[in-house]
Image 1 (cartoon, helix red, strand yellow):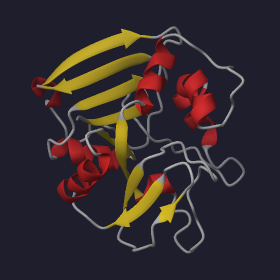
Image 2 (spheres, one colour):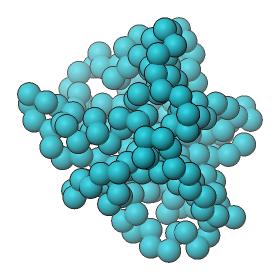
Image 3 (cartoon, helix red, strand yellow):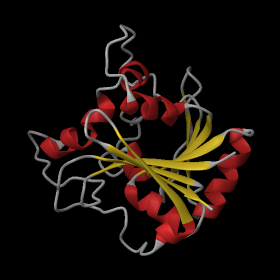
Image 4 (cartoon, helix red, strand yellow):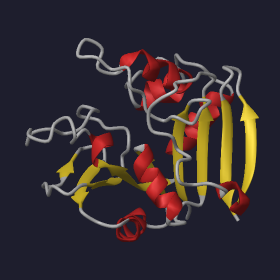
Length: 214
């Protein structure tokens, strides 16, 4: 069993963007940041439900496929689930429609209690107020020997990194500079000293950097 995290980041380490508008709620930068991932065959099938076989292959596809493999449970922040934008909507069920791509128990860190939400494909969202250690203990038990993925957002991943709870961190570094947003490395100076670091360049120009805890 391993505790894993995967993030798309810019050359300057930003994992979020700030150019959203009411007319363009995701902004242009977000699409550029995650383009290589969302173009893969795995993303199109697992997230969009596209079974046509369309999508890129190669290095980006391999990492996209690995993102879902052997995961038995997930932990994410309230923002990733959408509670920050939909805090007053008791019927909000997440961004992913009736078939969320997780297919495992998902623990959403929040200060606002909600009833669990279960989907037919095996995804169950549990809403908990817990420390990283407490949340991880619940997820490890639910994973039944599978990996636990720390899904995001970036602040949640940083909390788990600072606590020394992540075994493997994968960053897909897109060849663009955002110049704002939340950066993965803030408060984590010297983290590379306790990790083995491997990098691989994809056909898209994205550099996949993996930090494995010694």
